[in-house]
Image (tube, rainbow, N blue to C red; front, side, top):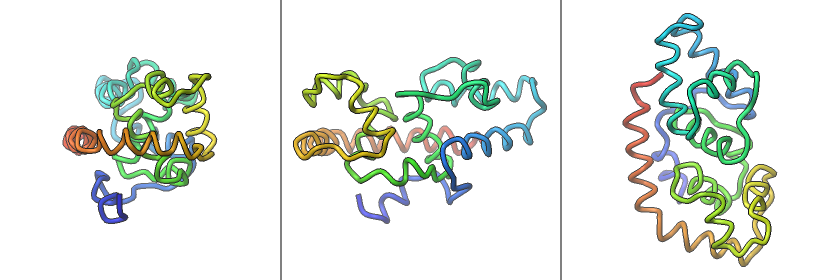
Amino acid sequence: MDAENEKSSRLMEEVFRGHFEECLDHLAEKILALTPKGSKKSSALRIPLATFCGVGEGIVANWLARRSKPLGESAVKFWCLLDLLGYRVIEFENLDKVTRNCAELIGFNMITNSVLSHRLGCADPSMVLRTIHSGRKLGAEKKEAVWKIWKEERGNLERIKEDARRRFSRLI
């Protein structure tokens, strides 16, 4: 994906740039500024975030309050969501192109980590997520396999992103 396509794949201009936890804090402050703490509207804003990440609304409330933090696939999904909302998560931005494509396949529910790990022939199913979270690069063989999967799925991925853009353009 070239720079122009990458930029157009985002929902809006940059809202905030920082490490994941800083972006999470900024989003929490933004939601709190829009709605009183504990209000139904606050809950209504968290529900789409929870749905996108595949978790309950209470879990998102805990993330935003910093009582816990997203891990594994949930964190990757939240990175993708924050990116759509205009946040530039440094850990996500610093991934090489293929690893970022891998993260987006997981983050937009195109494939689970478990299935992707199996398709890549990983003995350890947590290897893919560890690679994404650490910012390391995939080995050449796995990189080629991810690239092929991404090329097969990129049309579907763009449709899913476009749908998510429409849904989240009204959120915050």
